[in-house]
Length: 376
Image (cartoon, rainbow, N blue to C red; front, side):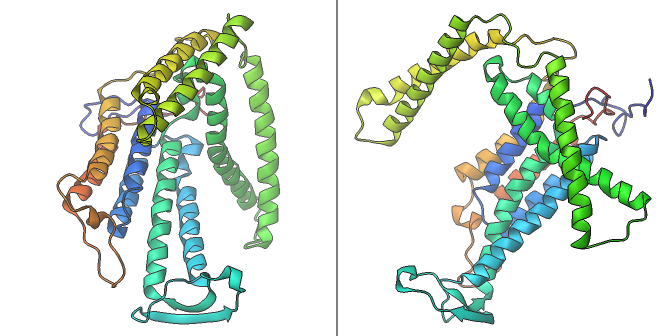
């Protein structure tokens, strides 16, 4: 068998293997949930450092696993757009703010009152906009880290059978970014071999067209491969069982919605609360169990869920719980204000929670070399 030999972790205590893809997704989504609770720039930069460490330590050698830097570029773009919009549509400027510069002011009609276009721009407004953009950028990088660390094709195997079609659509959607990253890398490599010296905006046409053409060809090859392997077949399910599955799922979702409405509205009848929620959950579980018969799965090379999976997913969930429950710290420390302009503090418990999520970098086993069957 060709390829590099698996190398043990430091000290030779753990054998390399791929972590369960759902463990990485649980960890990343939990960390994104924790990020949504804070506007503290120090905590947000700490999250980016944790993501960078974990991705660097536990990514595989697959081409799409080297695309985290493109998510960072996209994150910087988000922050820049947020700052530019705040500078152009400046609102809420007070005389005590620190003014930096002034843009040409455009008069607006009376029905557009409340929003200014142009005018003075303050340091507080730019810092507030940059912090808001940084929070969105961190959430985007969490999704990018999950896309980099987890193999989307192996994640499709562990979804419930009733969610198979939805899982295929989600998996294909999540695979778009890694596929584009691989296409861009291939086109840039080809340009270097051909000594292409065109840079800047003029080089965009020479890169975009081959990337789109390559993406279309790969999509056609993927569709042909999925069709040849039996994707989309209905298994042993009869039309009657498919109709029953659809009815159970529809009624179950209606029950969940009615239960959520009953719990949130104090004036709603009592039967719309927990009873409707419980009945909807039971119908959904029944629909998932019945719909699982539609898809036949192979048991070849199953992804195990062992102690490292529990540890990685648990570290992310525990970090989110600590930031959601406000245990041991003042909630105002998560969202410092820039009015008046002060240096934000680094609260101890949220910092420890984010560092706890970073332990996934050594709690996860070292990645094994990418097999040909797992490569895109």
